[in-house]
Image (cartoon, rainbow, N blue to C red; front, top):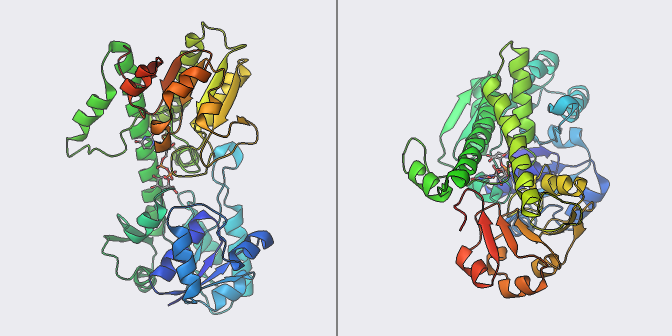
Length: 421
Ligand code: UGA
């Protein structure tokens, strides 16, 4: 098929390159000149494991081309995916301005009622509103993405489900046909239900994590081991083992924004979603709890304390630090008077003092805080860390390190949700 993709951001590039991998001819429209120039040179402007190789193969096979004009791409494609940003806008609710403006442009600039499939995460009810406004000139459907940063290529090629929201069965079939050869279950539904599947999934996962984080805090206080606790819970098939790792709180471009957006949807619908509000509040409290623990480790006085922060990305496997709990914790430590030096193998934060490697990051530190679960931190030479530090405390917020290895180097080790020895 000839397929258009509007927007060469994270979702758009994975979608475009993934569709080319399935054998489609994909035209990508991108308004940003610099981004377009990079792509035309064969350089990907984002990092995602495995994507670069697939992009090179798609370019080599002539299956992907880069364009400047949205209308041209849509008019030459059988259907087009809209992969535009919906950043947090007023009061954190997703701003649909980019999507709306491009739909307007397409409605006015392309004849023949083309099929436009919105991939971006948009507040519940948005597609129906767009259909009411542009439906005479565009066929609009919703096909939410379920890509996680770091595993997006696998998530695209082996999806857990394909959700298609369209009121027209023939259009839904056509969208389903783009995912040729994938044996994932297909949910064909109306656009509003498709939107709610996306928010329902992300907010459920955020709730699950927040619950686990609360258990971790209790476990640590009562001397239980949260890793055994979640292993024991996860063996119940109704619960399952995945997404049960406690941490400093959820971050990234999705959960923080989507929880706020679903709360707003509920409020507009006249329903007080107090459970989800508690999740948002408890996620904030998790960072306060951790910052409080760090403060207590330096005798309740952050001024003059040196903190080494290992990891600024919101999770391992990505260079993305948006809404990262690590960065927020660093900011509140700095606000409390501490000096924070950070390291991350991929992400660099201009507002933080960054060190070139984890050992150097620990120079003169009172505490090393492990905030992102980068596997390489496991093999750091802890004897070197012990030599270079001023204090001796390692606080592992991801249960990443081997306690015995750290302690053998003469350091004290504390991990989130685990008994303190
Ligand atoms: C999330 C969803 O998992 C995807 O399914 C969805 O498509 C995507 O949002 C989106 O809406 O686009 P992502 O934001 O890439 O994906 O990150 P996750 O892997 O879900 O992690 C979110 C946060 O939870 C991170 O801060 C991570 O460190 C934390 N987390 C995750 C834990 O603390 N423990 C876990 O066990 C898992």
